[in-house]
Length: 142
Image (cartoon, rainbow, N blue to C red; front, side, top):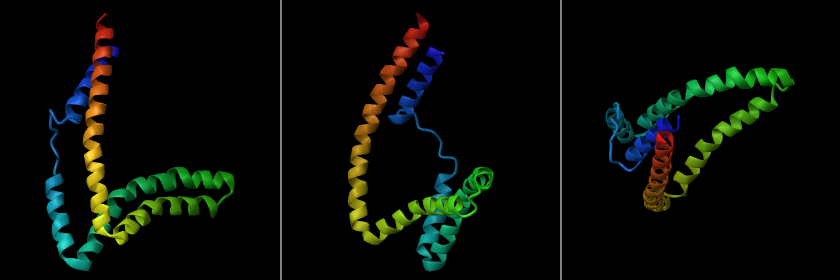
């Protein structure tokens, strides 16, 4: 198992550091649709929001009906737990809206700093994973 895990970590490092590029599986096509919708004003924004909601809906529905509702029924909380779930699932949307309202320039500057930091963190993580993967592989061979 050590040898297998070591090899998996080495492969992850090559992808993490950009030495191997994985196929995007149609992301470029979605980007073109996203740009067209963004350029079409309010109607495009509504459609784009609907697409994103549909992308996350199956997961939320599974969590809500499969986990939360049985838990709420079990604890006799028909209002509290679903309300907390609704508020918690809305928080990322609200946070994004606040960031957009705060100004794209500030958000752009923040993303620029995060991008610069991400490059260094990716390199450090890659080196750590490479050392661990090589160690596990060598340990598995001995």
